[in-house]
Length: 143
Image 1: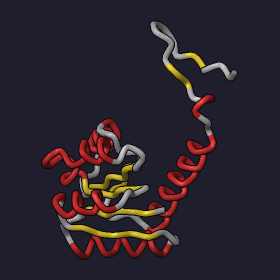
Image 2: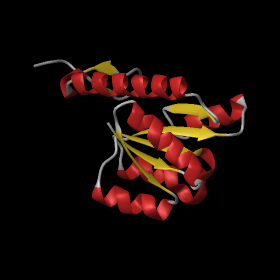
Image 3: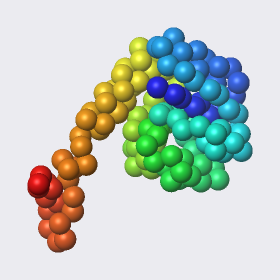
Image 4: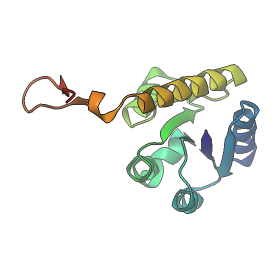
């Protein structure tokens, strides 16, 4: 999988990148949202990792979700509370990690995202649940 790490602190950015590469994935790192936009124009990323504070500044997370809808987002923060984690997940992150996180925690998150990605690719468009007007969504019938 291809990863983009958006982190303004170089030491943290490099550490996260090295952990991802150690798991056999490719990773690029940028320090600011302007650099992230330039990368998004050139390449699609399977997963974007970003600090919760950066995600909230300037609408970065919304732009990621809008312009790269197939990308999964992992957010992280040094702040430790259930409220912070819930906020990250409500805003569109698939995974939330508290910094500092251990290698095993990131590896588990990457494995879960890989499984999710593989599963979503196996579901054909004919098997997806489609809304059927009012009421509960219904499974689309195969021809």
